[in-house]
Image (cartoon, rainbow, N blue to C red; front, side):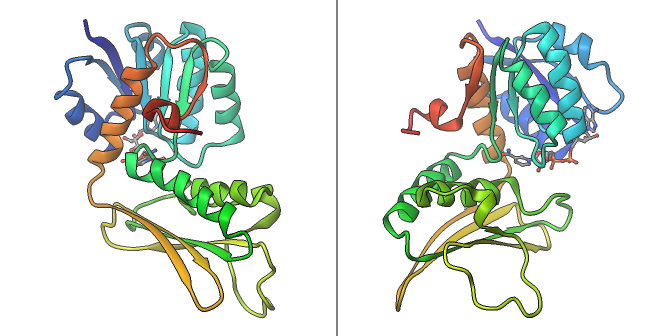
Length: 245
Ligand code: NAD
């Protein structure tokens, strides 16, 4: 029997991609869709799991309603506010929740690779460059932040203590251990992320390039199907994919 899926942010680019990809699955059936102005409380009542690619405020709203209904949640919205994160934390006490800045298999593998590289190459300078289409609202991308945090984890430091999101003017020499994240915006680029590790006279680049947003929809659906029936709590794409965390 298929699980009932609600799509939040259904009229958006990702919401549409999720609905298109869901039609190819037998284990999930779209039971409802909501976008701005729709009644998310009523829609949640009729689902087993929901996938949310919307806005941080909409994500907070849906998570509060989902807490009351104890519904499993797959959250793809990026740039989450403290309010949205608090609502998702509360939801994870009563239902299984997965929040991922990027649902692609390749990116999740990349997170593991950069952490491993950072651990092995702690003395090397690590930088991240991300490129996205000219309509993207938040920067740096949630994926770039996840990559930078994976590097920080590999270095064994708190990301907040070493991050550098912009450089301009007389900035002086690069502090050792700093992790820079640079942003490019243009055209219709779906998403590109490159992690650089600069050593003396050598350099490693670990890159991921997405050419279709269908990869995010496919991953979110895999996560949704996996999440149904799991105990309340926070899960990651590494759990879904069975990769070591
Ligand atoms: P989009 O602007 O095309 O779609 C967002 C949709 O949310 C719109 O249709 C909007 O009307 C709707 N919305 C606004 N308020 C709402 C409300 N109260 N209730 C329900 N829906 C509401 O954006 P998009 O490109 O589809 O991206 C959506 C989000 O997903 C962004 O945060 C983006 O960064 C993120 N994203 C994440 C991944 C990932 O893999 N995690 C991949 C791509 C995009």
